[in-house]
Amino acid sequence: MQTESKTRILIVEDHSVVRWAVRAYLEQQGIEVIGETGCIDEAVEMTASLKPDVVLMDLLLGNESGIDATKQLAAMCSNRIVAFSEYDSSECVKAFIGAGGRGFVSKLSPPSDLVEGINAVAQGGTWIPQEADGEMASNGNAAPKKRRGLSPKEREVVGYIALGLSNRQIAEKLFVSEKTVDTHRFRVYRKLGIHSRSELIDYAFREGLTAAIPHRGQTNVLPHPH
Image (cartoon, rainbow, N blue to C red; front, side, top):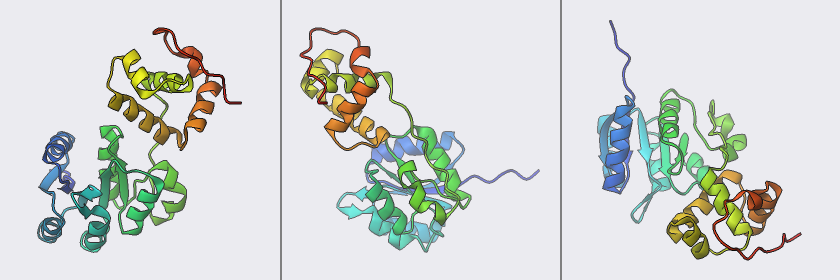
């Protein structure tokens, strides 16, 4: 009986710990990692010699650009390149797709998105964020990433922001670091597709998030800007 062949990928990522974690996860999901590197020149050589089905590409490789690398690799692997990056703005996605990439997965996405994105591109389709779907879908059969709702912790952070608390005050109330608060805020902006504090505050009051947050001590409530 003939067994189904595994998708063979090359990982291009300059952080060794990230490479190790991604490789371990993908191999658990039945994807074969045939090589890994953190250098563009090595990525070009390995793509030519190993002929991976998909190249998984970080977009910032030290001082080198993954966008530039994508331009070099696109013709070598039939444009089957998936970006795996924390820089997931619409502009970044468009630049990557314009360079010849076919899939874009944010490092803030669930791990399952990475597997689905790789498999979609390996089968000749595309995988792009919802925000860019309208402009890029004509490049292939897009399987856009669905917009997800906010987690309970993200809703709580938004509520506190709308009440006028600083990152430091929110961190103290939630018993987390200021960096964690900032990460939650970044994820909220990305999920909701908003770009300013005023938009975030409008959303919080509209959704009743200021009333829904748990009582964790006295807050200096600011009036709604409108």
